[in-house]
Length: 422
Image (cartoon, rainbow, N blue to C red):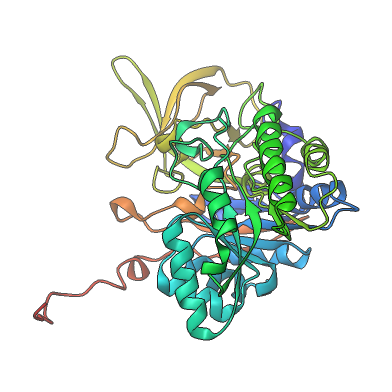
């Protein structure tokens, strides 16, 4: 039993004994709920009913192959940002014609891989990238379909490090630049430039920035259409936020799609969406054991066996994650802890001044909202092997990434015996 008022948010894990799971598979341990993932994707698919629309899951949020297979099996495509993500998605069985390739710095090798695979569309972010795609596609004698990623200069009202739609951000091009590309697109005969794309940021909880960005994109679409530039695809990006802490309220699928319908009323082409966090974050948790409790001069620390290398978001973004003690409910007093990991960095901190039932060494805690940007951002810093990941489905579970061994962690290293001249 979970001793918290947030039990209702954990319905996707109700069939699993988390304590038994942790004993069997060890900690730190990522746990994902198949039911929760299905529920979110199904809600968005239902909201989109009647539209010519495709959901391209943002793979960077969680690139586990089992997660990709689950989403792909329900009809989702993929939004990728690297050649590695392309390979993951194809291995998971998501067809190339449901893949869009985003990212501000695609290499020639990555573009070639995507051209060979036959991805549906490239989202282009610079003139240099447009020129490179023209060169590579022309060598194959094909026309690559592409969209211009516009920067609508809208503040997403989110953390500065995950805001991507303001003019000072590195992403996309201005409306004026986009107009020039369409007016002169005959210069790039191997690029079929017939789409618009945007993405203004992540963890967006206020609908107003989304509304503004959609309206600006819609105005550009209508302007280009009137000028004779047929637009076949409009990609509205992703960025929907989730509830990480009390008081936060995620935008519903219905409210989000209502804004899309309103802004793009009359559009006859295909609409693409790129949700990531919204589908996965609340469908995952990180289980961790308490190593010890430490009384400092001014603080009381709860040291876990999970660390910043396992879940980077709190260190990187000062991000909040609810933390729960898992186990048999008893009348333990509340204690104010700084919840930290064992890594040799002050930044290895999951929470500051957090009230929890008193915890003893060996107790199990769950760090919630860890399904997105958790395992996908993990590292082996401090020579700590990557954690295991499991997918639960009702009362059963499967290990979908086994815990990394030490030998696997150092497999690519070798002595400096093979000296060469540069």
